[in-house]
Amino acid sequence: MKDNKKSKELISNDKKNLKKTDRKLIINPLFFIVIITYFVTRILQVFTGTQHFWSRLWNKIIDVIGDEPFGVYVVWTTIFSFCVYWIFGSIFTFMDLTLSPKSLRKYKVQPNTNEAIDKKTLFDAIKVILFNQIFVGIPLAYFGYYVKRRKGFPENFRDVPGFERVVLDLIVCILVDEIGFYYSHRLFHKGFFYKHIHKQHHLWQSPIAITATYCHPIEHMLSNVLPVAGGSMIMQSHTSVQWIWITIAILTTLNNHSGYHLPFSHSSEFHDFHHLKFVECFGKLGLLDRLHNTDKLFRETINSSRHRVLFSLKSARERYPDRVVKKTL
Ligand SMILES: [Zn+2]
Ligand SMILES: [Zn+2]
Image (tube, rainbow, N blue to C red; front, side, top):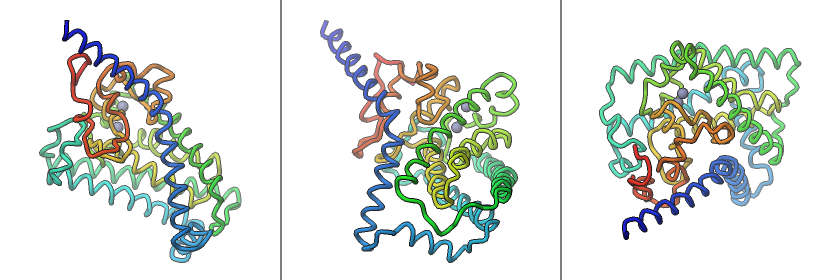
């Protein structure tokens, strides 16, 4: 009788958690990007005593890289993307290879996985990732440059857009990325496409950060690069905004594949669950998964309760331990 009551309480708590999850899935990414950008800008303005901090910073970058369109659109945008990907990807890879710092091990989404990464498997993955970045990423960057050249390069590199325009562009980029990634990803889970294209990405059932772009070149083009580039193409975003968006998109996908659900960062539970179960959670935000009910199993598991930003040092598993009243992993 007592156990029954306790069980009902746990289910009721879980339902409350699920309601919170419903809200945060929609709000989190947009909310944090807008608020953090706003406050960073304002704080830097206070310390530097200028109203145009981003403009000054961007113009210093242009002073270094020059304002020749081919150099900015193709060479430096590629170098910038490479640096963001490999600097942050290497930090996660170092954590996986050395199993340190020990204090972060409790944040693993799937504990005890990749505890000893096979060096050859890792090296093979790096070769595929580099192939995609060089032979897919660079030609697509050149294609973007070619389209802009046909339009006569309407952009003035040194004129940084206002804050509101930056936010609007980022919101469009996020939504276009969600739509492009969700539907192309779902298509890649259909028989022929899965077998011949997407299966490669799922060889990592418990992914690590850099395997975010470990995939077939066709998938890299249709699911990774084009959805990310789509929003800024539609909005004809300024290159400075594109670089902000590239940073957000790369850090998000590295985090989603990292296998860690770290405090004060966006939760990686959703996409990690996709790698674990294959059949659900195709999008990034969770919006289209909710619309198409492709997050049904996820919402029935304790993973959905864990899918939130952690505002303390307690891990998601400590906060929401596996329970018998829910389907556990
Ligand atoms: Zn998939
Ligand atoms: Zn993935």
